[in-house]
Image 1 (cartoon, rainbow, N blue to C red):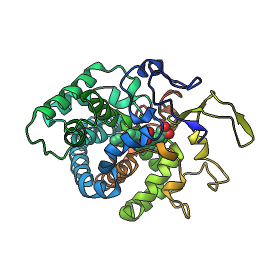
Image 2 (tube, helix red, strand yellow; image 1 turned 180 degrees about the vertical axis):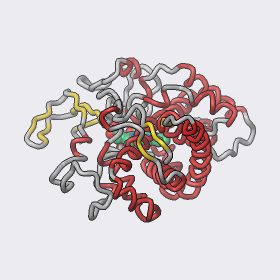
Image 3 (cartoon, rainbow, N blue to C red; image 1 turned 90 degrees about the vertical axis):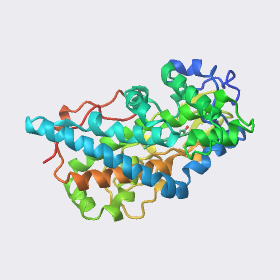
Length: 360
Ligand code: HEM
């Protein structure tokens, strides 16, 4: 393949590899993860997490956790919103709901003790990182916490817990396939890789549904039947992880009549591909009823060997969030006009800063 990830050697990324954040170059000096490797190293390390993210594991192991956590976060959101509502004030969907559901789920999946979750959830890294820049962040406190947790789980005799860190410790660290640092870095990647994209997909998804009341009414009537279509269309329409697919050109290649020269950097505009009129009829229209729409035809979760490892995990979470939210709060409505909302900086994940809502 002509487009490759940065070299598997962390200090020798190919020239031209495009870094968006200043920390990117520094990150190459850190412990690398498979995100920044090419196959076969990429595939070998990616396989260490694969079992946790298969459709079957998501159905059996993670869906019940997601149902429980989203239910609890909704209870808190409803309590907060009712209190604000009594004063005639709106409540912030992002601050009071969208941030908490994915964050608590991923902490649970990693095996972070409940007592630590409230403190750690306030961390801004959780709000802003992507798989690409997870390694670029300088959040030493959070990284140290995860490293400490790995150590703690390593010290526990037996260690047969079912969470992701415990499994990495049992299957990779104890037999010596990975070092303690590598396990901590992988766990940190899982923690930060997709949280921002999930938060933004929830916020943008709710906003878009509220702007399309006919489709929202359909979804409220038939949530089980339409949840998967809804999630596919939201991830196509918004491409929350838009600047995430970056590559260096390995050998000269012509794509769409354009020459890409060896050593050049490429930021793949997957958001443009998701709005390609040759592929999607009337692509700028939001439409959960698109005929023949298949998740694998859309690029919200990337493409090729680096396609999002947690796609099924993320899709399940979004399905549960939208279904539960509109079941519990069928009268949810926007408290501000579309033009009054602030969107994220263009160099960040695609997102909206806040979506103020009333419950009815
Ligand atoms: C709506 C939510 C999400 C979206 C839209 C999303 C999107 C993406 C995209 C576009 C890529 C490809 C990057 C590339 O081409 O280089 C990617 C990779 C990745 N994502 Fe996600 N992601 C989401 C959630 C998650 C979550 C929750 C996790 C972890 C639990 C996660 C873990 C990863 C990992 C580990 C990779 C790297 C895969 C590889 O290099 O082989 N993602 N994601």
